[in-house]
View 1 (cartoon, one colour):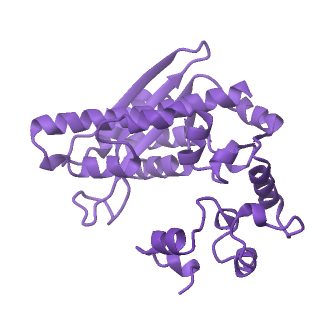
View 2 (cartoon, one colour):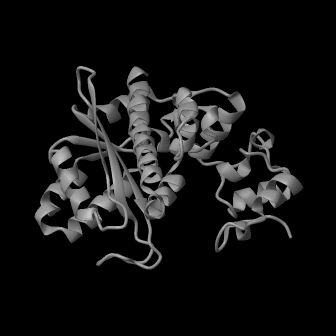
Length: 292
């Protein structure tokens, strides 16, 4: 059976890697990254045996974003829209609170008011960047096996004033977490919602294609943006002990209660180091944008 939309529906097939990479040798960055899987343009190219972006005909009908992505890949050049980035940065005022949440899920909710598979915040990291260049860090990590959401929300409100710029990468996730906390705790609702109102999204310059490099492979995910802009951070994540990505953090916290005290403290340290690196990465990305 040939590859297509069905490879990801209703979930990604366990054999996808084999079918795509081994059988059909689809490159890591191909027409499937430029066009939506199953779109007419992607099907048209694939039916002609075209999977490499270099092979897309010059006169092929493309949208402006698609055309830019193809040209950037073929030329292997970095594209930077400095005027748009400058306008974006005007709205980011000091002090800047770089924010990242970590969450986990429970299949069968153990706490009151939790839905199955709801994202439950258990940790946050804040890097606070001042105009003179000084950087301070604040963090919170919940106790395991108890509902620490109120304590997290309370510390969160103490750590972030209601009238400052809060910066997140893909802020819809952070906003969703804060909105759910606000709906649960009336005494903190006003402060939490004020923080939400002042949030800015560091993803926008990359999502809007104002800053594009070939290494980003057409993506604006921080997974591709960070190593492209700040290469040394890719190594920094790999050097972390125990927790190196969000999925590992989620699983590590969910299983803390199964560890003995010594192992638990070691894993808590790993969780704090990982989340701290996430917000420090945002600081570095912002520095790159300011330089250009």
